[in-house]
Length: 171
Length: 172
Image (cartoon, rainbow over all chains, first blue to last red; front, top):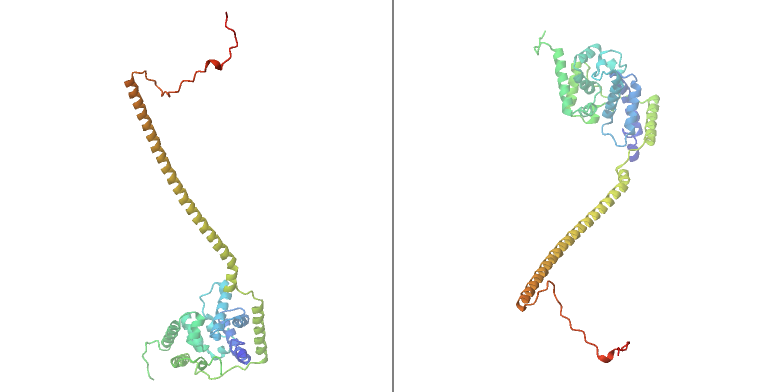
């Protein structure tokens, strides 16, 4: 039984199937947001790379997101547009996943107003629901930097909502 | 429990609160507790295919050489280097010994040469002294001095009259 727990990066076979069913559409959507031409292939390749590893990964979800991000950016490399970070989040319908049904036009507009660096961390934290530690693994930056980016994104969001500088007018 | 559920990853309370606050700012509403996607047959088959693909790649992928293998490969080279080092050390020791021996022999030869030169000088001096004494002695004896050393010899013994045969008659 203990051997079957180590069969997959997510534990048992059933746990792997459940994790795959939940993460695969999200990873496809994530790759599509980076402008990947073949997001399904990238998501599948990420799963294969994860399961191919001999050393057990501590955070498999973060590893999958990081791999998808790297593969998507590598696919985009010939276009020489590496600086683009989740730019397509503002374009409705491009992601094509369940998140687009959740994100309405107003939310997309608010996300679009943020700087790309803060938007990426905010997206992973809020929409994808990943932890600070996992985001740090994905973006290959320290946890403190992730927190800083999220807090700055929060400040920018607050500024969008209240551009007059904090003076609330009660009507 | 969903894989995206923050409670599964033991997030700190402040992070959960921050996420809720940000969702509120974005107008996304509260986090839905459990919206896990049930694995359908298509996704399950795809997951199994990917797993088989990973296993196939793991089997066929060329393994990276391990440290043990690298050490085993480097062993002959290390042995050769060690042998060469030992041989070189021995050669150096031998060369040092020969150099010391040659130096000692050179010192002995120098010492012998100086001893020989001293002996020659002493002989020459003795000869000169002898010649001086001979010249002095000949001057005192009134004899004609010879420029060379005369060794006195005994006169030959004259043979007796009956020791020979006359072969010719005396004329009468």
